[in-house]
Image (cartoon, rainbow, N blue to C red):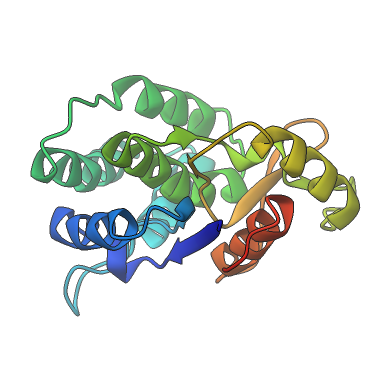
Length: 202
């Protein structure tokens, strides 16, 4: 059997939560494809990483200094990495994000980085392959989701991948520009992955 599992932001908000999720996945060897959201709130007054990214990008878009805001996002991820005792460094990823924020890559790109980075951590933690949905989930020039092309690209991309982490919430246009689904879009990603791999259970 093949199973696709999707985990929301609150279940991936901290290293402790990650460990619980890891135990759930490892408890059943048929849970082969994992779709993570961005880290949610750790406690009631906390801020979701996606909201931190939107706020950070707003400053970049206005040409203002966003270093402190980006550092706070880095710290959130570093806390998870340290808590899981992973040998993982996101320095280059954050350099790319900073560069793209300065180049005004758009709020869709900004918001998607929460899932993207969490996916890298999750893949590293589980020892699964990381698959960037920007490679295979497609939107047309009008920004409308292209179900047929996505099915074709995603099933081909996952064809020979035994176990993978595919971040939720986003894909890309044909030119590579990142496009997000509406909020809650990780659920959609999960269903697309399930269809692409002919999963028995999502």
